[in-house]
Length: 243
Image 1: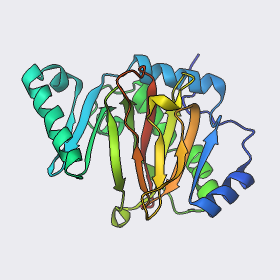
Image 2 (image 1 turned 30 degrees about the horizontal axis):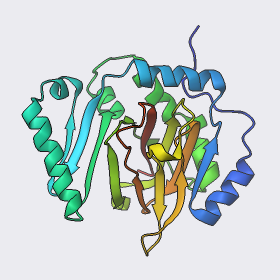
Image 3 (image 1 turned 120 degrees about the vertical axis):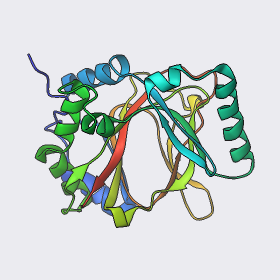
Image 4 (image 1 turned 180 degrees about the vertical axis):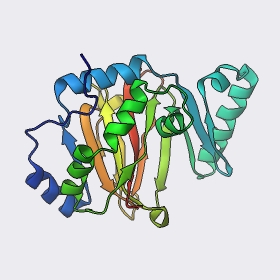
């Protein structure tokens, strides 16, 4: 039996969700998928994904390594990357470091034709999901979405930044959280939003089967995951576009 990897929960309160988005320019939709679909999608991301690495440190980057390139990194090169990230953050520059599988790039490059990641991307760009986001955000012109699988493991993070690619059609960013653990706040990995003074005005805990949507541009970050945190902060992220 084929399982729909993006079967939406039929009991979502779209009116309440749209009102919340209109007020805050962001919303988290919990239990967005059916339980069966969410469990199947988690299995794909957690157990059937060949993780590479995304990293950047100031002007050095962004870099995207596939699984083979990551495996080929020497210990000295890994240490060099870690030092560059450390220095960039000390200097109040932008940096990031997380495990990544570029679902859209893999689809376009035919890395695994017809595989579950390809199937997910096709569902993501089909009318049921697009209509859900259009209804919640009010952005009726949304027409396509990209995607990457992400895993924030211990010592990984995404620093404060603003996605401002409106000229490229970016309208809404999304994070489909697939964390199966009862995630402690002490384990970091929160999707955080900031005001003009740098204060955190909202933070979404890593959860299972929760879709976060926010209009761009918006100052945000993924908080540092400390060394004692477990592996489990899985998600699929990307942008919905109007062109």
